[in-house]
Length: 123
Image (cartoon, rainbow, N blue to C red; front, side, top):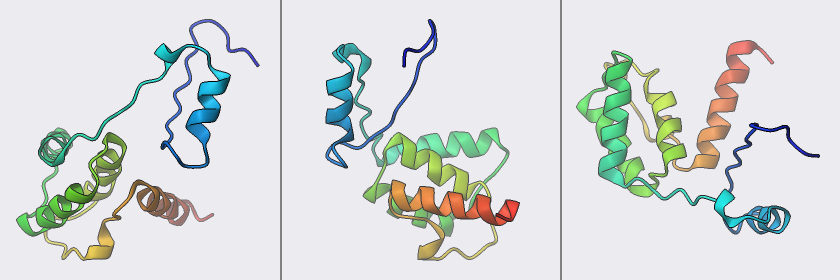
């Protein structure tokens, strides 16, 4: 199927998982259509999260930041940072956080997000 002019499709994949990236490279001729998104790093991830929280008039406690920082040392890709933000913006600053409150990977973060949406909408 051919997309109409000016329609762009963004696909995010991990190299080595299900060979999706290689399959896409075989289908799409031009290498200029591929961009590797690199991790932000712990500090930039934290800066981005603080900016997003400020934009939404939200803050989290120092204890909560400790958990966020711990997670950012393990994974700090842009997608993961966005998923972390989607989770922490729901926290109350007085809420006691636990290890399970913040997923450690993109995959588990997405699963947690989908479970939350399912609970909210009753499906």
